[in-house]
Amino acid sequence: MFEPKRLHPISAIINFVKTLKDAALPLIIVLVLNGNIFSGEVEWIPLLIWIGVLLLVLGSGIIRWLRFTYRMEEGELRIEYGLIFRKKRYIPIDRIQSLDFSEGIFHRPLNLVKVSVETAGSTGNEKAEAELTAIRREEADSLEEAIFQEKKRRNGRQDDETWDTEEVQAEMEEPKREKVYAMSMKEIVMMAITSGGAGVVISGVAVFFSQFMDLLPVGTIYNEILDWIQIGVLVIAFTALVILLVAYGISIVMTILRYANFSVFIDEDDLIITRGWLEKKQMTIPLNRIQGIRMEENLIRQPLGYASVTLISAGGSVLKNDEHQLRLLPMIKKAEVGEILKKVLPDYDVVDDFHQPPKRSLFRYILRHSWFGFLASIPISIFFFPYGLLSIVAGCFLAVLGWLAFHDAGWNILGDQLTLRSRGIIKQTYLMKKYRIQASYEKQTYFQKRAHLSSIEVMLTSGGGRSLASCYYLEKKDTEEMMEWYRIKRAGEKPSEE
Image (cartoon, rainbow, N blue to C red; front, side, top):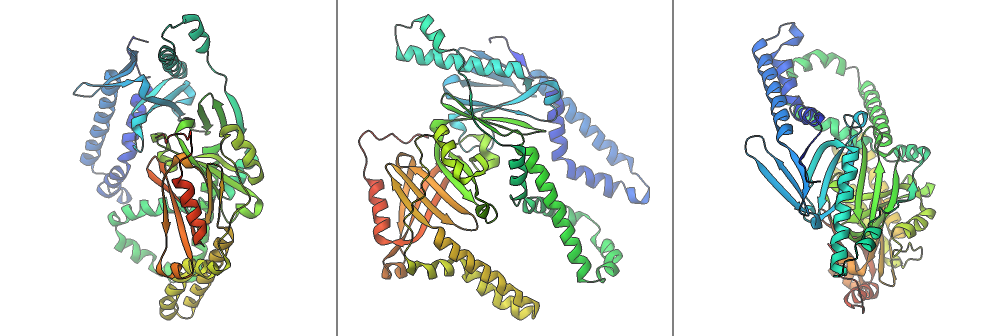
């Protein structure tokens, strides 16, 4: 693949749409406020300026597309681009960890994909090392195969200086993917219903309006709706309920579209996850970059026997929307987790037997979770009496959450694996190998020392920095046992990889 290739022409349109999306708010301001649309009058000068800006953006996108080329040459992926100044980026094949594919609404009708190039140096970055906005699926597969073949060829030369061409060619045959897990539509719908994603939608709407409200004629609007507001609290409460239900419905649809056709594959030393309906994504994660596993159970799914499993990875920009951590099993029966993990990561064991905190820790758990709620209920009850007294219910709920946290907390050591279980609102269970743990901390306050209690925190490396697992108010001898387990280096132990 030595001949320079261009992206598909649709990439110019995709970049134009992205720029237009970023400029949507200023465009609305110009059209609505300067255009006086509500009064029926339109000022043409601002409108013509914006049309000129949009044409300029579209023209620059076309020029960028014409000047963007990529090719494989001398063991490197070579990319040349630039609107005014010509830039060159050469990425050695050895540094490329994976190629991640995604298909948006512009890609799928034309059988195109966007390719994100993940390298060892892209850990924690918001962007991939390089992106090919739109190329044909066949070209993407050829590029992936060329990189795979080049890596195989180099590894073959390093392992055997005699270099038998026929043997290496036999080894370089494309490995067969094995599907280890797939979600049914019923499971996806149930996951969407129990995800609690309405808060995300409401937060997004709130952020938009917080930016837009300063630009609206609030005084005029206020005078118009003042009489309507005086109808009463009932109308406001009903409106809030409708907004919540609509946001909940939107979150369900978004979750279904995002996780439709969710499948997990094993391809030699790589884990491949595909998902998405309107935008189809394929993510490749080298198994040697997985630092640990986190299993989560929220208050709705736990009584139903369901959990989600997240991989904590050493990096890769593809994980930026998943907080540097990737959902391996978005929702699955907890009893089935061990069976699936044995196929993907056979070194990890799901344990059910935990050492729990002593009974004298119960009050500390309840106090840790509820003290702020009860403290805040005092001024709320005084200033908003009698309705403010309802805030005490929130404090009681947090106290119950503390009681649950006490019963869910625990730890287990099995060979070179440490398992820690704790609860905030969500019950979390961390599975960690000793050679992946970056640091372990034992913490003890003055009052814990008097009660012969202490807490443990364990840090794993993730794409954004670190991921902490913790367990509070354990017996002092238990935390000492965990610290001693971590300090002792076993013979033949694997080195920590990043």
